[in-house]
Each structure stands twice: as C-alpha cells, then as structure tokens.
Image (cartoon, rainbow, N blue to C red; front, side, top):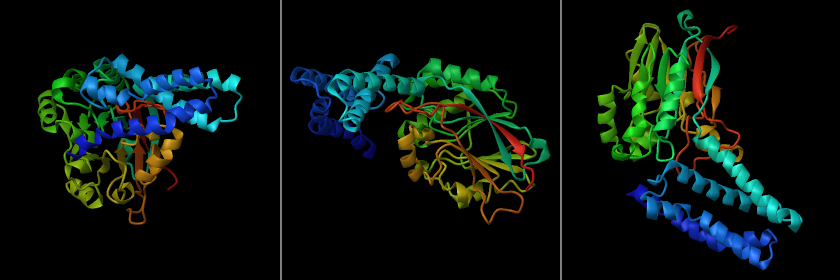
Length: 372
C-alpha cells in the first residue's frame, strides 16, 4: 500500500517542476520569447518521463518498454535536470554562449551518465588485508556481485555479460549481496535466468536485498530453488574447513541484521574459521565487526554521483564504497575486521545514471595483514 502511494509522488513532482522551475529556467537561459516557448515545451516533454512510464508502460519506474527507449527517455530527463542546475549556476554567462552551450553540455553529460548506468560492468580487482586471516586463505578470491537490478532497462543480454565476466574472473567463490531484480517473474524470468550459470569451486551464494521485498519474492524464491541458486537466509555454511560464510536477509524481511543477529548466524562457527558476512546494507558494520573478519555489502550504488554521495553516506553510517576498517575495541586481539562496500553491478531502473562512479564486478583478493 505504501509503495503504491509512493509511485504517485513523481506526478506531484512533475507538477511542481512545471510550475516552479521550467519557465523561470527558460528565462534564465536568456532566450528570446519564441526560444523560451520552444525550450519550455522541450523541458515539459523531458519531465513527462514518469507520467508516460506509468500511463503507457504500466509502471512508474520500470515500464514495459524496449530498453533503448527507456535509456533515451532517461537521457532526456537527466539532461533536463542538469540543464536546470546549469542555468541557475551560470546565470551571468552571456546570452550568445548560454543559449546553445548549456543544453549541449547538459545532454552530453546525461548521455555519459546513462551509459555508465546501463553498460555491463568490468571486473575490478581489489586486495583486502584482513587481520587474523589464516595462511591457507591468503590469496583467496571472492567474486562479489551487488545490486544487479535486472529490469526492463537491463535485460538478458546484460545479465549474460555479467555472468560471463564473473565466471572468467576465476573466483574461488561467487557471492551476490542482494537487489537482484526489479519486477515479477512473469516479466523478468528470462532476463534473470542466466544467473543460474554462475560457477565457482566453493559455490555461488546469495542474500536478499530490499528490492527483493518489493517484488514477488515467493514467486522468485520458487524459481531460484528450481535453478539451484542458494540463499543464505540468516545462516552460515562452510565452503571449506577454514572459512565460514554467513548471510542475513535484508531488514525489510524482518531479519535482525545487527550484531545480535550476526552472532546467531555464526553460532555454528566454533573452530576458528575466518568469518565472512554477506549483508545487503552496510549499516551496523562496526557492531558486526565484533563477530566477523569481513563483511561484504552493496546497496549504496557507490553514491551514484559526487554530491549525492554525501547524502548516501549520511543514510549508511558513512559507508559508500570501497574498503573500511570496522575493527572495534571489543574485537578479539589480532583479528579486527574489514568491510567492503561494492558500488554495484547496475543501477536502479528509476534513475539509471552514474557520474564519476563506475559500476563493477568486484574481485576481492584476501591477504594476510602484516605488522599487526
């Protein structure tokens, strides 16, 4: 019910944009009267994205349109937003420059941002020095997929490319930290199906994200079971004797994702195994560091863009992307803990755009920390 109400918010935003921004922005561009009228019509068309998605495509964020059409409309919308910002920031630029240069800059930047949001991600290798890592796990390779967001804007061809690159990365284990798909099985089954072809010596393991909660989770769970895709629902497994791999469901499912819940997940790991936690959101990582050696998360999309990254950090206890030391005074001596926040493999279909923030398939190489 709440989510359905949320889908109408873009319509309200659309009206506010029309009344409060479009016409003043066109005047700020210092166009002549006819030029202001034309630019106003162009901007109104661009800002009709969500209205048309809901009316013609059946879903305000994830319409059933061809992917290239969604990309084009996102490009138009994002370019219009950038143009408004530039028009306000560069009010004193001479008319002969502003009238043509700002729209070119705005929609060029939007094209780059949308492409960064929808292209198949490359493999990025990251070494993580882990206190307390057993000698036998020095050089252990984990392939992490996060925030795939398979949707009408990111279809089967993209999933196939991600699976091919993940398998070619040569990980000892493959993990996925949630937000797999946006949409119901009836619409997205074929686009998600290639995930069943992921392979690794020590297995392929998933946990849920908040977007699993928004879709038909029961339907997806039946399909994942049929495909042999394994989820760690608040439990841990032992892919090898020296490694405990645990996962918690996202808090949207009612799971306790804090330190107490994580302690229960690893209750069976009593023989000194190195503990790796899969958790969609990086929140609570400092508390969880008491119970694990490494936490792998996503959810933040790397902050999306530099200015937005500050807001994303505020909502996620300062964690946005990369490696963090989450050791605490309560950590066992010599163990400590690390967190890796993946920027994700994809982007939510509502705003598939990234600036100065590349997506990635994370190849994490565990290393013993020396000098500690």
